[in-house]
Amino acid sequence: MRRVSAHEATDGELILRTGDGDRGAFETLYKRYARPVFGLALRRLGDRGRAEDAVQETFASVWRGAGSYRPERGPGGPWIYAVARNAIVDRARARSEPAVEAPEQESHEAGPAERAEASWTSWRVHRALEELPDNERRVIELAYWSGLSQSEVAEYLGIPLGTVKTRTRAALARLADQLEEEFDGPGT
Picture 1 (cartoon, rainbow, N blue to C red):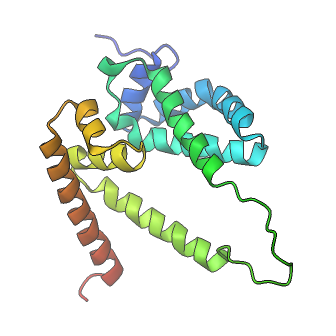
Picture 2 (picture 1 turned 90 degrees about the vertical axis):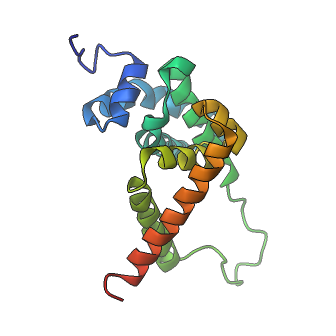
């Protein structure tokens, strides 16, 4: 069977190929969907900067979560829009209202050092996630990035709820061990 080029492939095929690490497939998905996702985000959020952030979050989630896509559950386009809706909702929740406090009061927002630490921690967690077995990583991604309950994860993956719970516990234990090793460093 001939493998079609990324430009000829369906959205679902591109998502599957992205899940296998195919950057060309990912770039094609980005070219197809970045503008419509931006338009949706801009309409919902009303702010270009937050809409751009939502697009970035959407495609970062597509890259990370493409392995969890199941073509038998539906075409790729709606799956991408579901990922986009989650990113847009996250951006809407993160909306910071103007402070009503007097200007001389200290800001409680994270400063550069705190933001750098949070970014470093996020990177470490994502690296640790990549080390998990696929079946454990999928349940974590669906639960924490897609916001599914354990019952919904079980239904989505077509596996028993007990299996989801076992994989979640195992994955979280592995993540804790990996992050502890990384924090402590080798030989400490």
